[in-house]
Image (cartoon, rainbow, N blue to C red; front, side):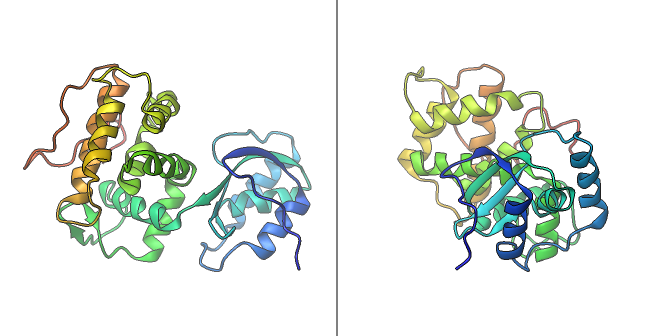
Length: 259
């Protein structure tokens, strides 16, 4: 039996050795992952060999079975360079949730054509290669998936739509507020009754907006986006409603990179 490196119980920065990288690439990298690019991992090899590698939120993500979802190029860089590198390791990522969020992000940012929309919002027939391309272009979908999972467990906030909002928020000037946003949604404690996090939490906890029903995804997305926008701007939120005909609510700060 292969003795694989132990994964953490939650997101954690770890020192990844070449031996660890080799084991994960050999035994935990499914064939469904995209074909590796020599250009990409060779760039990583150079940075790691030169001691120029920078530790960021981009790291390694594994599903519930311990299979690699994101990070094969970074692992290859470690293996070939022989360098030990500190990286964020995220276990227990739900690939289905990440893929569902990618279907939203992909069509929203016009990453493929044609698009088969469900309720004018969710691409119900996106090709696997298109989904993988969206996940690669938006690594935030993988790195922020644990937050979406934790808030779902705490209050029932829809995971894919929440993840799609978070991924966009992480590219704005309000990215530094994501951690406090998540903390409030998970605990629900010590907040003003009009705190957007508590209002959103109570709405989902009470009504459990149903994923997959007519308007479900767009409704939940808009509720989350409205709450996030208020929280990011430091505003209180009295009521939280999704209105007929209002379209898709933009995440504040994304105007500069939306198509």
